[in-house]
Amino acid sequence: MTENHGLADVVLDHDRAARRGYPEAVYCEGKSLDQLRAIAAACRDRGATAPGRPPVTLFTRADPARAAAVLEELPGAAYDATARLLAWPADLPEPTGGLVVVAAAGTSDAPVAREALLTARYLGRRAELVMDVGVAGLHRVLGRLDLLRAARVVVVVAGMDGALPSVVAGLIAAPVIAVPTSVGYGAAFGGLAPLLAMLNSCAPGVVVVNIDNGYGAGHAAAQIAAS
Image 1 (cartoon, rainbow, N blue to C red):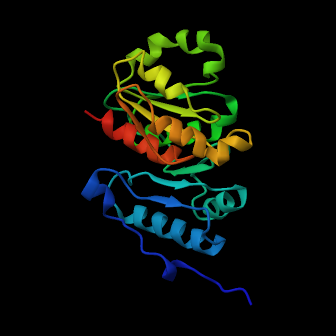
Image 2 (cartoon, rainbow, N blue to C red):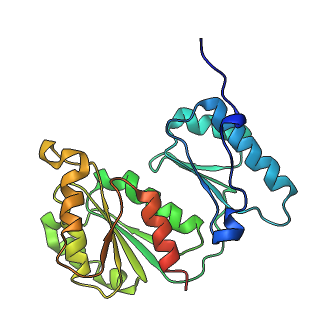
């Protein structure tokens, strides 16, 4: 028998935006469609009674079926299928603070890179995406140095050998947030090899988030670039 789980299974942290300056995000993977509908409806109802523009709510790791469930209750939400991320309200807040640059080693890293990019933007930062600048062709990253050096913080997303964050950190003054991805052949061990390479970086100023954690990297970047 299939159980019908709804809002009784979750406790939403509506006050997180007031307490921390940034609202709660909803991790969709593993949640039932009914749970997501109930959560989205609660966000909608809360927003209807709040003065002014409600704080943005992000729904992360939403596959098409889960995104459709959220959109049933929040039809005005924005959905990025590559990032598997929904944002409600859909319009971006006016950006403040410094520039966040997200640099992805390859186009296979795009889902994680876009999750970081959109998270930073919806948390109120100006953010730019640089794609396909992996170390297999160093001229590519060198060709984007002006933009990288203009950033307050750079998020570097890479799988395979995970070498790109060390290269970038050796070329710029801003802190680097390294994001290992599960992209790569068998010896990459689903992202473990780039994770260890990034943790062992010899370049100072590199901090590392968990494998495929674009949301965590984008959130940290938004906080660093806030001032």
